[in-house]
Image 1 (spheres, rainbow, N blue to C red):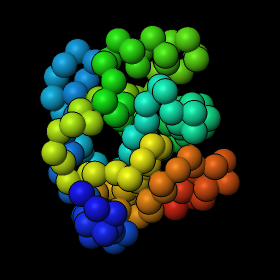
Image 2: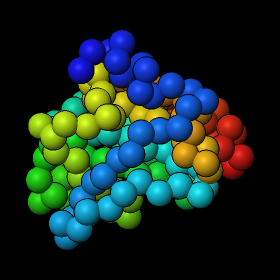
Image 3: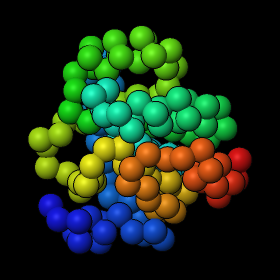
Length: 141
C-alpha cells in the first residue's frame, strides 16, 4: 500500500477505517471510540518507539491510549514492557502481514481520534512531548 493510498484512508476530519486487533489473551477486539483516543503502532525493536512509549503511558492517565504492537508475539511485547516498567499501558496486537486499511509507513505511527472516531491528527515517527501535549489539549484533557 503506498503512502498516497494511506493518506486517502487516514485523513484528518474523516472517519477512521475499521480496525481489529488481538488482546494478549488472543481475543479479537474492534476499535471502539466514544471518547478521544490515541492509537499508536510500535514494536520492541524500534528505538523511537522505545522513546515514545513512556510518554504514551503518562498520557494514558489523561486520555484513552491504545498501543498496538506491530507484528510481535504478545510474549515478546509483554516481556519488553515489563522490563521497561511500562505495564499498565493499554496494549493490543496486530499482525504486520495481515491486509488492513490502517497501513502505516513505519514505526512508530500514531493517530489521534475524536470521540466520534474521526481522525484529528497523524504522526509518523515518535510523538515528542510537545506534540503529545498539543494532542492532549485537542482531546480536551
